[in-house]
Image (cartoon, rainbow, N blue to C red; front, side):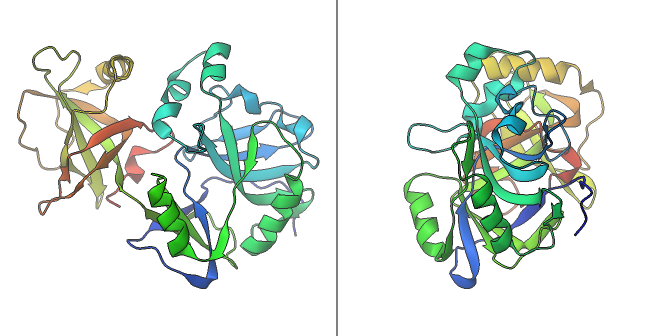
Amino acid sequence: MSSRLPVIRTPMLATLVDHPFDGDEWSFEIKWDGVRAVTTVTRSTRPRMTSRNGRDLLAQFPEFADLQRSLPVAPVILDGEIVSLDRYGRSSFQRLQPRLNRRTSDPQLERRIPATYVVFDLLFEGRKDLRDRPLEERRERLTRLLAGDIPHLMLAKHIDVHGKRLFALAKRRHLEGIVAKRRDSPYVEGRSRLWLKIKTHHEQEVVIAGWTEPRGSRKGFGALMMGVYEKGKLVYVGHVGTGFDQAGIRDIVRRLRGLHTSRCPFAVPPPSPALAHWVRPRLVAEVKFGEWTADGLMRQPVFVGLRHDKDPRDVVRE
């Protein structure tokens, strides 16, 4: 095993499947609703905590800047999810939004919305690259590493075999879903069928391609025009006009102004119920919705939040 510290450019990603299942070769975890983060911790430098698209996350989450003092071993590379938990232990990406949108340190905000790093994989420890080792071995090492009480860190729990049971629990508790992982799986960058995700509700990342004029007392915009990429082309999947608060509307309007363009970014311009304003497809949002319609549109979409950790070109229909 190499003692040279590797660079993780893309975390291991799960493939979406429709139904929960049981299996002797599989283990199952709760799917956390936050920001994916790969973290490299050494003794000599500040931790490097990056999102899926390589964005530094310590500016938004400075509570993780001293991890080298808390971990018993270094260097290590961890994989996990930054989440905001309610009193029942449920994570919410929407609740995390104020932390993601801030530009400067705000101790009051950090106290009001504390962040937890839920760690579910160990890729490197000491002098050993663990990526080719089976998941079960990596988990055993991770459990020993996080055996003490480490501030702001939490070890992700799992169960073996009984995926249907965990999915039923996730659904009762209104959680996002579960992740199934082959117990013998190595850690491979990018999307893989060695890890699968099963959601309790419909959810989709979308690219914001424009907005419509507000009506009545609404300020800022009426709805956001949404798209996903299919074979390299941006395809219209509907518009979302609910789920926003006033602070969120102001933040989105500010971002949209800098991206305004006269050219429609969709491969086929969509019918618009009101005057549409187009933007360059740079912003990614997360939405929840009822179902896909026969013509490929989202029924009853609700805005959840902006995804600063996702590359627009990676947004495809799940």
